Image 1 (tube, rainbow, N blue to C red):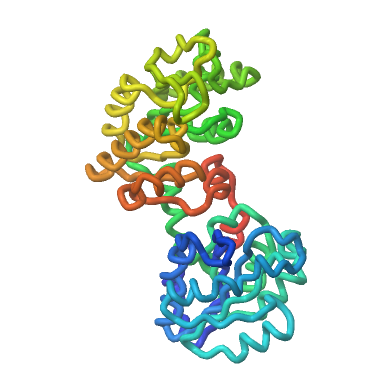
Image 2 (image 1 turned 60 degrees about the vertical axis):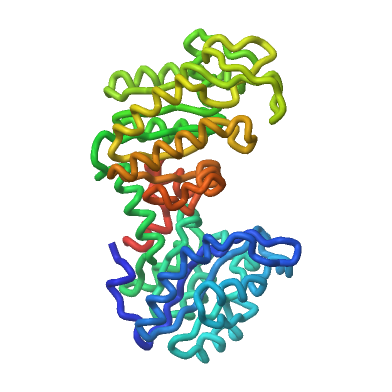
Length: 396
């Protein structure tokens, strides 16, 4: 694996693909610095070596057209504040203007290019566009895990123009190693906790990880498809009737592979999908009509406790209840606390996938787990066993 520390950037211009697709408020101020902070160590390494950094990213979905609301110029101040260096900006990412700005860049300086997706060629993976971008640096560094599953010009195609001068940034290296640890090299027992609403969105992950885990906790809305498939009564709970056969097949496969599956035994049921609904604790397979399961119950959490605390490697993907509502966040918080405890006891814990990352941030578990993945879709495709084009391009 070609990593950042394999290179000395003295007098070199590093062309770094970062993921600065960050949220902005109506005043165009960055409201969450996580992605910028995640790229900082890579940028600093280049500058401390005595090189300069040319940063390229997309922002939003301008669909190949210039949309002033999505200009990366808005985030220049935020990037400068995070890395502690005044960041220069150029209002294009290819062509004469961009090339001139790069040529004038001195060692120790940072230049941010305009939004890559102002050019339709970026998402099309256009070779000519990739070649134009490649003129803007001596060494190509991909540090954008969030876009590594896209074969775009700046994430994948460009790498072929840097045959012996391309590497992963620190963030992307960390992501690759964290997933490797769960999927290949992790200490046993390995536990996966899969939550979220639908079985359909997790099928390929479940099928891929059954060969790699010892225990699988199924939580959240997925629960009810499994329970109904086994003849339980789920009331008005979310349920994919067309996936019940598949749920039974997953249980059968798990049994054949010796994987212990843990499904909730009781839930917090509500008479409405609302924070102020009436609630009661019921057996998961005896939910009456007019009621729906919205969080894991106390017996379930007690069962989960033994499994989580016994694990040495933990993957958490998806909440176990409707954590956005206070009334139904207790299960997800309890799971977070148990993973924190297991991590303190020496387990390796990886959290990935949009909702679980949101939950971890909301409840302050970010620094209590071993690693929080920055890439939603890329993380999920990795767990499905797919080779991400952005990673393959560096390894080629």
